[in-house]
Length: 525
Image 1 (cartoon, one colour):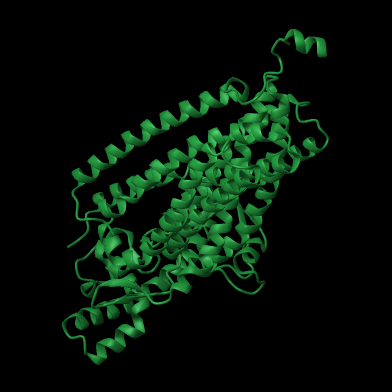
Image 2 (image 1 turned 135 degrees about the vertical axis):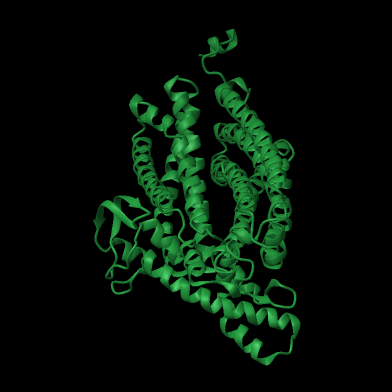
């Protein structure tokens, strides 16, 4: 049976839309909760009421965002059963384990503590409520950790082995899954990006208040915290991005080559292409401007190790497909006779390449009948969308460098107590609000789109993981999700804008300094 490409395309589109939309809320949750913890810590240490009110106001916006993140996250997980049933069957024993732990260890913890955070202001001591806030921050990061462990296994499938009798991947070493080097790199890079999103959110809204002369003390303090935390986070994103790049070059060489639009292997150390126009049909990059050595140092951390080019990797893939065909044949033999010693030896020798034979399923029903032309098509299919990855990565990096400059300048202004002195700066800070989301979404595009055509790198092609559905069935569910998520987007936008515009004064959280003084207050003054 040859796979229906339309079903695959619609299923991928649905998951991409829901994942990207869900990821609008995740980074803000990760970043804003730590800012709340910092502000409340200052309140407990100083006893100044102003910091308590700051936590309460930003907590309102955090709560709206958290609720939207939960709503979109739960519906997204149902798609594994709806649209990706074979994926769930094939790798569910491995992929499902960290997700289950995330639900039990992190999601229930943070969901419970959110309620205590809002309801416990007058029921808990200062220290008690502070501990709730810090554990809430810890819970959100634990949630991200387990989800990224699951995602990292898709990028670098360690600690698991294919069982020909059950036709499933099974865990062989949970510690390898847990301490996957890709998971460690993705976690620190992703949460740091979330901290940047949260910092920019607070910085931009506070700038809006200063532009209008509202809640000046509140806005100054909020911007100071955001500038300090944001600068540390932005620097961390760049530094930890180097670790993430090294992990990609070690485990996903085609993704690295596509990000660089590197068609041929260069002499070590490889250069970094600052600008260029990738030409996929002719497999070249026009008007390329290179910076020597940079990519080699980032990708290999050496001066003598090469980064293979796309064309070279395609040729290597052809060999892996040939070996995978041998493993595929041995697997079918063992299905009939589990004691066949020759088949066992063959599968043991080439089992890591069997996924490459499955790439042929897009073109023929039985990979063993593949022609050289079929193998060529399957090998070429491992090239992801080079222009998308090339530009998504560069825009993301440009945003990261801009964040460092903006937060550094904000920190300098805060140290000089001149945050409200430059209106052009305040406008720049305000209009910069969408950029961290853009960078975060592009980072997700690079990570996930760059993995194609694999759902599990080298193990399971994306086209094989779909459910047995018709185009009409997937189209109906896609339309339902678009409608549901659009409604949530409108609700979230309205609520966030409404409460941000009201500000802490109109919400009754902050004293209105411009209000007329009572006669007693006037006498006292």
